Length: 328
Ligand SMILES: C[S@@+](CC[C@H](N)C(=O)[O-])C[C@H]1O[C@@H](n2cnc3c(N)ncnc32)[C@H](O)[C@@H]1O
Image 1 (cartoon, rainbow, N blue to C red):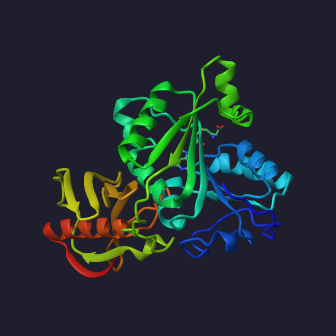
Image 2: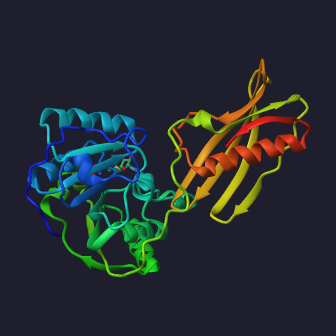
């Protein structure tokens, strides 16, 4: 990884995709040109802080799904303001896919990812082959993805997925000492577990893929429909799958709210590099039946979500409701 030693002028701690223009310009974000290092799932932020402190020549961008972990990391980073560290509270897959330009990342760290050990939960794992494909387009030519885990089965799984993507050469080594200081590293070492470490070097020269779907806005209300008609007679539901050019939408289930007035649909939206389980609600309001996405779980607003609202609206239209107006 090449380095520069200019001093960052940024004092921001958070990236806000609603406000920051996408794809991100890391030089603008950090206030200087420097190699970009990304940590996905930074937990309490120990390693993020270590990277920022030990490598002032890097721009360090951390992403973490959990609000409470991000809060802990925020407190840690507030204590020692590091101008070269910025956090994003959200999904690392979104950050990689929609926020970062191709060929912009020097290194990606994934330390002790959630292993999702049950077979039926495997598709929740971060390091799937489509993620390696994505990483291959985002990493620079000499870039690498560094995995450290306590979980031997996940370790083998990730290596297999990297091989499937055909874009990486693996190098198995002992982890750097700092990687054994994270909260989870300490926890597993205390239990005398082995720690597995691999560096996946990007080797292919595949052309960058244009993103198929892009973030529209953080505003969920943009994607909704207004209908008229009666929801009370709708009782039957059968799961169905809509295959699309860019992925699929699965209408999984339908529930009626406890007061009987609203219908709630659980829907899986699968877009390249991004799977989201969302709730779409049909609710009678004074001006008609509002069909829209529930904010629960903070879904990312993509074209796929708009398509999901359209499918639910069409499904309701087939059952006697009338479309007044749509916004998707
Ligand atoms: C087992 S913890 C490890 C935390 C930290 N890396 C450490 O070593 O102490 C896994 C972390 O990854 C986060 N995570 C899981 N999936 C994620 C995703 N798609 N994007 C960002 N963070 C994610 C979880 O919220 C959790 O904090």
